[in-house]
Image (cartoon, rainbow over all chains, first blue to last red; front, side, top):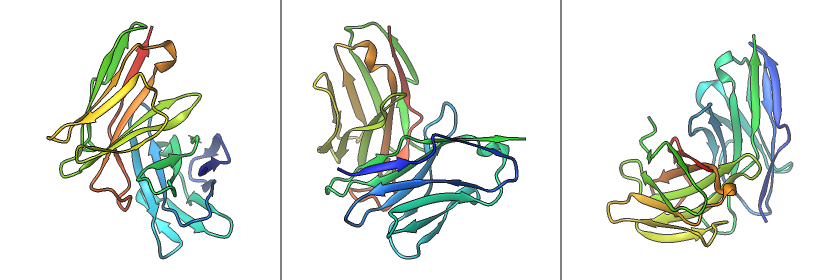
Length: 114
Length: 114
């Protein structure tokens, strides 16, 4: 079965520092990959997606992610974080079983400190 | 505002009761997905409807049912409620049956069963 592993449940970082949130998936077939952000008491918002083509994907709010097929990873990065980036981040992968659904990781809580 | 509307935002009810959660997809979107978010299970896919037809079912209990109406809004019915059904229930929509655009999420309905 398809699975998504977010390797860190919490990531504390100081403001203006770089951050990387790690995501690995298991699949033997091509998949689509997504990162979503959830601010407190809100729904999930799409940050970026990888469908095909260039392995470096740029998203909103200065985030980017790199697809690495050999390592089955899709890590999210930002060179300089702000207090407002404090939120829960979810990695998701398309279900390779032919169904149009996303399978989500457990989430990583990013806490940006002044 | 994502364009996906969920009502009510909060719901408190007693065990054994039945509730209905409502979702209006973003204008032009034909697919509706329901997810349950809880602390112990994370984001779990429940069901997917496309243009009124059920397309995929996930970990949805027999006590739960859903439908999508001709105007494309969807309802998730939860019956014989148990304490463990307390969770955030999200609706998401997408234009078609592919994941090229990802999902657009609503802000969720927080269900508390007491």
